[in-house]
Length: 307
Image (cartoon, rainbow, N blue to C red):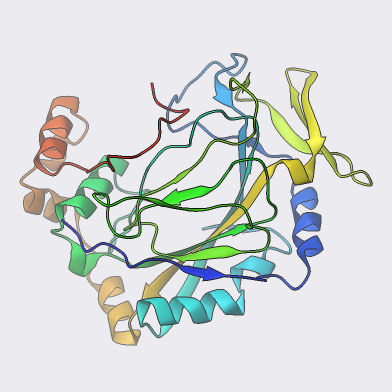
């Protein structure tokens, strides 16, 4: 098993002006439903997705104007150095979640890992996760910091997480969440978003639905789906979070080591006792995953994405 992460750090009063984030949210609308990873190739006109919308502001080839507000936040950089006892922090991702009217929790999970020369661009996701849970690639793992910032307090929507390991009770960050952030290692700590809203049921939208502002002065946002407005509410009633990620290196020697000694897929397979030529074979995949099972916290909540 890999080394699990220490408890995250709670940051308060993260932004000097929360309105700066509100302006960014509106500028970079619309947002589209999360969920392609659990039903790829879904009918774009079938209402199969909960009202959980997402958008990338920063990724490998794109940086949204203004996203530097989070990408280079000095408090994130300094807190990450302290948390990891590291000298080098290289931010690489910022993305946004909007959630509303979801009567079950989100998935209980750890975030997807990266290794020297291996990430989701060139390695199947199940292989990356098996590499992590095997504990056989700790020396080649690229430490990653995550900060989750919340715009507002809503009905529900607490972050449930397991800072002491999956076999210990969960704790929740909820209630006074406005302009706070939890910073730590979400690749080594299970976490889960609690249900959002007080209604019963989870209205579904199609993969082609879009969320965006419709009344900037009044603060209303709405979902348009298949030519129809299916939801409208003030932004302060929608659970909004902004996630930030960075690669972390103890020092320059550590960064150079991970850059200059990439793992080949064959080397990964050999260490796992697998056959790289059979990574697309579901039976072989099941065999290797069973050899290095991923644990699940015993008190994880039922998820809206459970099949």
